[in-house]
Image 1 (cartoon, rainbow, N blue to C red):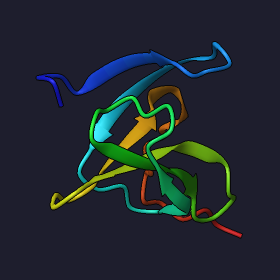
Image 2 (cartoon, one colour):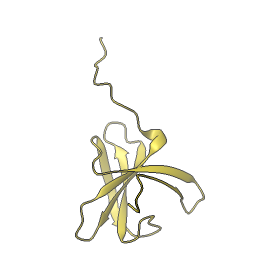
Image 3 (tube, rainbow, N blue to C red):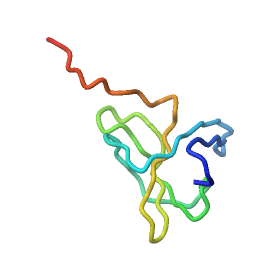
Image 4 (cartoon, rainbow, N blue to C red):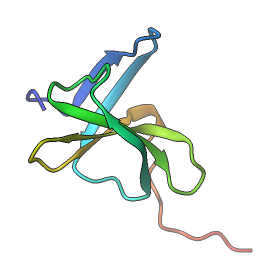
Length: 88
């Protein structure tokens, strides 16, 4: 989007977010009705994107008319899944 993967925005409360854009986000669940209010990407409505396991806020799912959606995920919230299962 706009030639960049990383973007920095302030929400209406002044909280700063550095997000990365992704075509897919396995494990994220989008909730809420799409809204254009305070959108960071013109022409794209957003919904909250939460962790499907614990429900923590990870970012937003953006959708536009006639286009596939994309996720804007808070970069400091992303962790790599090692794929290893713990013993016990």
